[in-house]
Image (cartoon, rainbow, N blue to C red; front, side, top):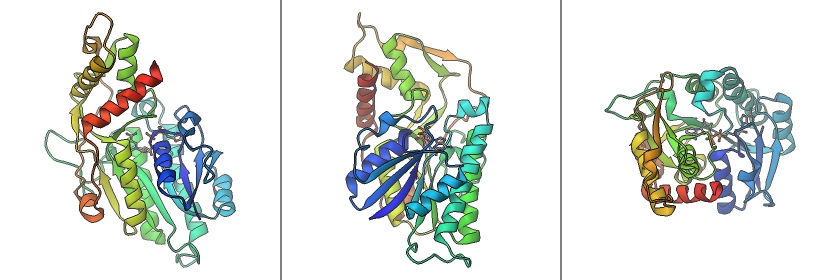
Length: 337
Ligand SMILES: NC(=O)c1ccc[n+]([C@@H]2O[C@H](COP(=O)([O-])OP(=O)(O)OC[C@H]3O[C@@H](n4cnc5c(N)ncnc54)[C@H](O)[C@@H]3O)[C@@H](O)[C@H]2O)c1
């Protein structure tokens, strides 16, 4: 039995990942370290909280004493690091916590991995030869694209807001631990995820909630910003493949291959709801769309080229965008009804 530390497992992607991982593997014990900020919710863990191969620890990734205790006590042999402050709007209003969690927290975990897994010459200690640190990052580190082109793993970093700047900094720290200390780490940069268990503040849950409440659906600017939408289950499978099969020190971009303007996505959700839960009086939900003042520094377009992970690790998205959106909308209709 191998014990791996998963951080941020009460959040959106982390909780989906733990559910997927525990179902697939019986020879891992998962320790979920989560501070339960406003974005963390133990309801997200209820499908697996009683699993014998799972334990929850409430705590901060930036807490040195706690993290070192967990590494020692549980003989941690792998880390998958999801925990982060993740909402761009919050980073614009208060960047400090983004630096504390996303940068200092990541450094703290890297230091612990170095201390417990490597000897003084930076060779793996006996029993930790395969211990791996998987850092979950974002395509936002690359900045914004124009109408053409895609982010590849070679695209220079150009973060444009405090959130993406803090994630870019954490990626650089991971990179530096690979090159300086020979740490067995990998980085994945993914596009916008969607699926069950995402926090209410994010775009897709907001659109669905506002529709059902009969309230205006707020869309930034003219709704022309483009995101590449990745279904969270496809993302979980990609993380699994990279964690187990990637060579040390690699980075992979993970995208859904589904570019949508915010307004088109919103209209698609409205149409899905028109068929699933028609409004009294039969009016279309899209009539509730209301354009609001644009976000400061709003990146125009993100789009990912996933060829590297497809070619080297044979990963590909398994679900169509339409099917995944239907699954997602059904999940939130149940939650909000
Ligand atoms: N959601 C996306 O579309 C997306 C896209 C690209 C990358 N990412 C990255 O994926 C990761 C997970 O994103 P998410 O959407 O699940 O985020 P989320 O906000 O839903 O969850 C974050 C989790 O981390 C926990 N957390 C926050 N600060 C912590 C701390 N100091 N110590 C311990 N736990 C802490 C929270 O309580 C929460 O449970 C993040 O690193 C994010 O940058 C997300």
